[in-house]
Image 1: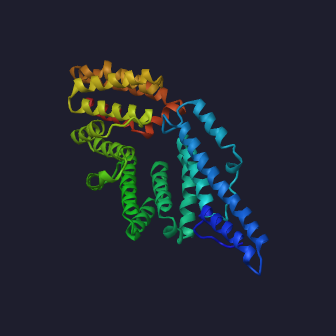
Image 2 (image 1 turned 45 degrees about the vertical axis):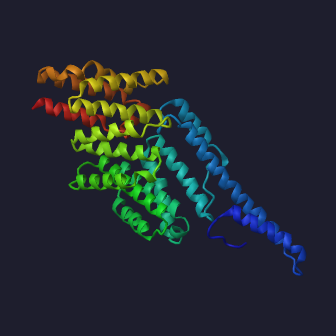
Image 3 (image 1 turned 135 degrees about the vertical axis):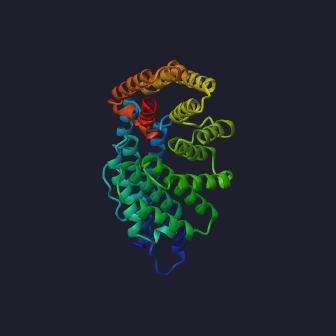
Length: 375
């Protein structure tokens, strides 16, 4: 059986079909061998397309949320992974099929907020690409995605390896001749740095990372889709929020809605980016805008039948308590925020509700408010 490094099975099948037709004019006929190869690579191509179908089904299950937020979604995901192609990894002789298998399990465990297991599958792909360095050149787009997933998994799971993987992605970007791959690589490198910073905020280089990311996206925003821009801006705004530069965070959140609105937002993205915008308004004293934003999100949730306890509790606090909280004594403010923290911690006993902390560390914001009110 011939070895095909590119693993472009569809192209290979086309060539084999032509070769089979030519056999009738060949004195040394190898039709049987060619037919066996056609069957072998047809199976490979069929499995590859089955993985693509599974990825689309997975995306459709989470079309409203980036994480599984309900038991119904979780059951759908569990049913999807009962498919025979996902029961066991038997694809050691195929780089692409192994990558597809590991990627789907990375998505699954990431959506479940089980980042230790998600990291395990991101690491499998990372090792796979390091063990097959020729794949960096054959599959630059896939290689960039493997490195990006691994960088995020190390950041969120709190595992080691971030620095070496970041260096490897930087080296891969330098080697790219095509502008699209180079820009994609820089996009994911800068975004991974923002995610890492937002997860591990004890960094002396935080502002440098943020400024470099903002400079990159400002110079290249015309090259990316609105959805990708919004994901980038969301983490950029969060970075400024964590750095207490609320004016800058306000500007970026406002830019999302003024220039990059799209109906293709997930429900979670729409709700949490606007909740954060409301909290940013509170920080800079724009209370009327905070109230109108929170009301808008509340109406959006009603229209879309979103009944998650965290979102309802947080929006109720924004509307009922935040507008007048600065008028209260320090002790009353501390009491209000401590009560909110206790109520949210109770809500977070549900694994489905706790997943919102992947969007933003709301506990951190409450702790900051308590610390300020205690001064």
